[in-house]
Length: 220
Ligand code: DC
Image 1 (cartoon, rainbow, N blue to C red):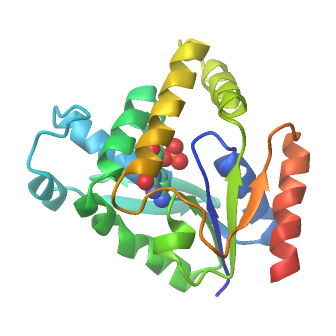
Image 2: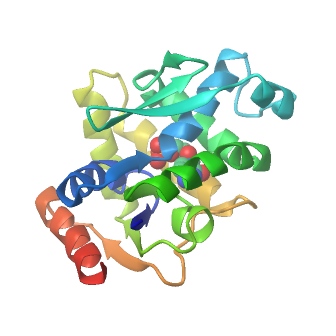
């Protein structure tokens, strides 16, 4: 099986680019951030805030996260309910960042991700795919762009979905999440030694896609 690991900070365009690149390559696209968001949503529904002042193992013992592919599109299910849209709010983003710092949560989601890569040609995106989840991935890419540009893209995306947010909120959230994600003790966001760096600052979406596809095609 072939696996392409794409890691990078929030808003680097990973999911949009990875989805298109996977379609082009005929691979399934696995958005692992959605798994952390789903777990974050569960804790939020249990009444927890980002301090996660609760018994994490017992919440996880009572949680089922499933990933299913409907017409090639990934859908995520929390305790049997499709939450693919509900996990996209700013609150769910912050909760995802909080739960993703917990070793119990990372262990809870690890095998699901590895199994998908054992059974399918995958293009998987996240923060620790090349470093932890698939250390033997066929191709590893570290995708990034400036914080300003990443916040601008995320802001436009949220506004287009009809959400009420300010650019400053989105920018501040992004800087906070970058900090959390790259400073946590377990599986922090960092470029794997053997990953290719792809910086999309100033690139049009089509140019970024070509950059990714060229990196992959040169190596498989
Ligand atoms: O990519 P995203 O914004 O949907 O990710 C949501 C959160 O989950 C983000 O704060 C980092 C975390 N995450 C992670 O720790 N490891 C992954 N493989 C994917 C996401």
